Image (cartoon, rainbow, N blue to C red):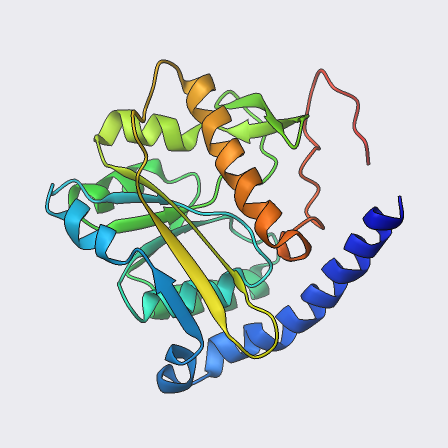
Length: 233
């Protein structure tokens, strides 16, 4: 219980830093931002794009997501799939920012645009670690707890034939900057079923979250929208 409370404090400290760094990601100069980034695996993009099928880049919600995206975008262009904000003013601001910084900004329900971008041999980033509901979701374990999880990664991989790559980024201690890890193509993906694919992705996200647990977006209610499981909130 003490460990949990300590993690909560560290998480809110990380959120406080994120408020400042989000502004930096929006208005900071390219030169200053480049000095912050340590990117591993960028060569995987060049190798996989030779297949001509694009890359489905699977990410996750660490708190400094906007800054991580900006840092990666300075090294290689990519499009993003995002959840549109309910507030039209906020949505307009974020939409403008994304369209300026990324090669494409695609609403998460617009699967056709994702497929079109992949068909044009682009890298498309998507993060499936937020609570979803609907027919294209399954209950998949996340830290041992059933979580309503979108199956979009598996479905797009099956339709497009695009290689799937996992990525994550987080802040290093002190003033060392940010590290971004870009994996190689996920082996045997898609696999036997949409359900097993979705479980694999959740496991990858869980392992990455353990690397910098205070920086994972725990403030998102990940375990809501589960019809057959009581709502813990």
